[in-house]
Every structure is written in structure tokens, then in C-alpha cells.
Length: 369
Ligand SMILES: Nc1nc2c(ncn2[C@@H]2O[C@H](COP(=O)(O)OP(=O)(O)OP(=O)(O)O)[C@@H](O)[C@H]2O)c(=O)[nH]1
Ligand SMILES: [Mg+2]
Image (cartoon, rainbow, N blue to C red; front, top):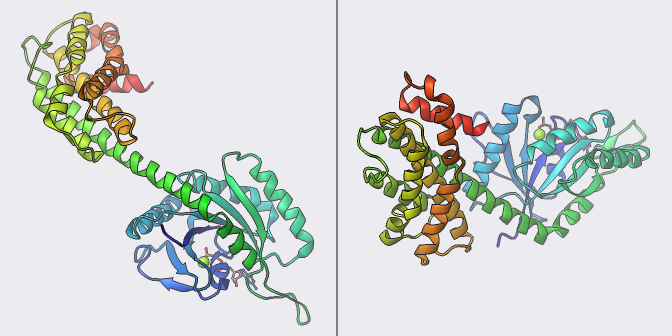
């Protein structure tokens, strides 16, 4: 396991992120992080602490900038063995209490993707001792609205000596404490990090698989628009086989042809198709086309559902019957199937001049409502 903690350092411009990072002993820049020209992040490695800081900049000005920063963080982490982010340091300037709440809100929204990630608030520029208590109180109050944020510690820091006037200077403080407290939650942070990475991987696969399903369903609409009795039709089989295989590949699931044929040939799917056709008050190629689209769409979603259970060990590809039954039930219960007959009933009169593709898109939209 990675023996360093990857810390994402957030905070508005001028909050003192770079100064803080510079103050952590023996910082070395890791080059190649971030993208040239639009560089949003810079990565530093401490020679003393097993800590790696990701310095960010500029994201407060717009949502787009914030997204760019987050995307670069993700890209960076992907390049580096996909280590992910272990903890966040929120830099909040101790001299501007009025903006605490606003900044905390902004940063909380920034880290949404990293669920449960340990958060440390660094009150930078804590030059005034008398302000510290009130600052901590205000920060705690702001966080009380965000029950889901895993707030660990609020630490006042002076990163660099500060000259109040010729006689008085404020000495650096808080750096040791910040690093120690952060490292104290090493194990917890690594577990949360792993959970987050696993979830992100699943989300990415689901996104890709949904796209694949949408493309296949659109093809099914075209293929299905034939003036032959549809319910027993085998014309969709190659498409369904291809889709099922592609989804398993996206989820990196080993399959054999028996499993695929069992899923695609599931009697539940055939009977669903027959059931829908007979429930629809009108008939014809247009209806066939839309039904074909809906079936393939529902099949894709069923296979996606099965795939997620399979990779979690809750469904076994060796138990072919179980998998195909699961997918069949998913198809049967997919909202698009339930919506079909109602949709045609409602829209009998105004679909005459529409293309099946348009009707199918319309049907999908009606589901979202
Ligand atoms: N003396 C002293 N100055 C500090 C301290 N922290 C921040 N500053 C000053 O505050 C200013 C802004 O600090 P930076 O560290 O550049 O702020 P940043 O958050 O990295 O800002 P961006 O890179 O623009 O996002 C600089 O002039 C720093 O010297 C500190 O602990 N002591
Ligand atoms: Mg900076």
C-alpha cells in the first residue's frame, strides 16, 4: 500500500496554500503534474513527512475553473498508480472571518466526489491569538450544517514568521500539529480513499455502459421497424448478444457464450416482448420499432445491474440460470416497459407523423419526468 498521504490543499487565492506547503520541511516539486498552460495544480513532496501536497489555484472564480482543477487532480492521481486523495486541507484566512462560511460552502461542494474524505481546516495567518478561539467557533458553526463532511480538526497555523511591526514578530506555529494530526488518520484515510476510488471506477463503468446501451437501443429502433410479426423475432438477437458482451467487457467480467445466449434467450424477455405488443392498442412497424428499442434498452440496464452484482461477488457468472433470471426480471420491471402501453395509449393520435426514433426519444424523456 502507498505509504504516503496525498493531501489536496484547497482555499481561495491568497489564503496561504503555497506558503503553508513551502513551510513543510524539505518540500520538493514533482514536475509533470497538471497540464501545461492551464496549470491548476502543483504537487510537492515533503522530505520529512510522508506527505504529498497537491497545491491548487484559482478555482474560486468560477465553477468551470473549479471543475478544471478537480479534473487535473483526478488525472494526476490516475497517472500516479491511481493513488487517489487521502485527505483535504482547507486553508481559511484567520484574518477574514466574514468569509469563512462562504469559503467552507465552496470547498465542501468541491470535494463532493471524495465522499467521507477526512477534512482538516487550517486557519492560515493566525497572527492574532485573541482571534483563534472565535475563529474555531465560527468554523465549527459553519460545519454543523454539513453533517456528511468528515471534519477532523481545526488547526490555527502561522506558516512563515510575520512582522507586526519593527519590534513584534509572530513566530511560525501549528505545522507539526497539522502534519501529525493528518497522519494520525492515515489508516482511516486510506480505507476511505480506496472506497472512493472503487466507487469512481464503478461510476465510470456505469456511465460507459449506459452510453453503449443507448447506442444499441437506437440501432434496435432502426432494426425493429420491419413489417413482420415482431414478438418472436430473432432479428434483434445479434444486437442483444453484442450489447451484452460489450457491457461485460466494460465491467471486466469473464463470460462464455452459454451465459450470453442464456441471457439473451431468456424466456422472460421473450414473454415480456409478447406481452407488450399485445398490450399496445395499435400495431405496425412503428410500434415494433419502439418496442425493439425499449427491450434492448431494458436488456442493457438489466445486464448493467447484473454486472455490478457480479463484480461485488453477489451474483456468480457460473450460475448461468441465476444471472439470466436476474436480467430477465430486471427487463420485466424496467420502467420503460411499464410506460410503453400507457405511452401509446396517451399518444395514439399524435404519433402518426413521427419517426420511430423520435417516438423512442420522447418515450425515454417521459420516463425521466
Ligand atoms: N508572513 C506570513 N505571510 C503569509 C503566511 N501565509 C500566507 N502569507 C502571505 O499571504 C500571501 C498569499 O499567500 P500564498 O501562499 O501565495 O497564497 P495561495 O493560497 O497560495 O494563493 P494562490 O496561489 O493565488 O491561490 C503571500 O504574500 C504570503 O506571503 C504566513 O504564515 N506568514
Ligand atoms: Mg499558491
